Length: 170
Image 1 (spheres, helix red, strand yellow):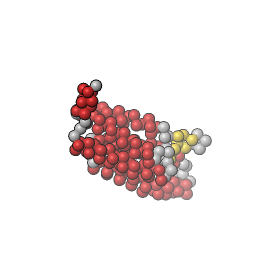
Image 2: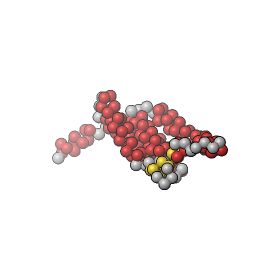
Image 3: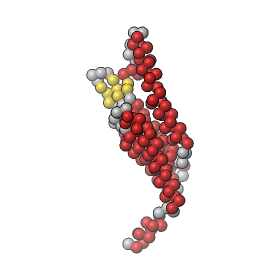
Image 4: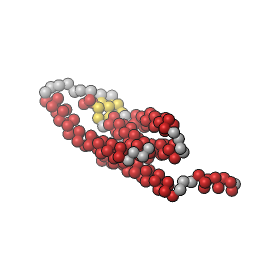
């Protein structure tokens, strides 16, 4: 029994390692929260908590391998698993409305997938990548909506049939 407790304490990282990992986890949740807040304010299916958890989970998967001393090949396989697995979470947010011939939730599904990628970037220690990725995501989500609306109005005024893209919404 004493050996098991001693082994547990021997596996605990030093203070600076704990602080570093803690800040990576907090940073990851915050980056995911930025995107999640935008989705939450837009009353989308997956919002603040979902995006924070996706980013945090992705970071934990990567950090677990990094902290265990895994090589690049093993970390690469974990990243591949996160990228493929998170697609199922995003797919759960996609809804086809057969009566309206519309698909809803694709943009939110894409933000979930992207949030996982940002979490992975935090996990491997590339701090600048999730910052720029999150900012560019917010620019896309906020600034391109008016452009999309203008294109739809233009098409409608000129008698063009509704495009496939017009039937797909966030």
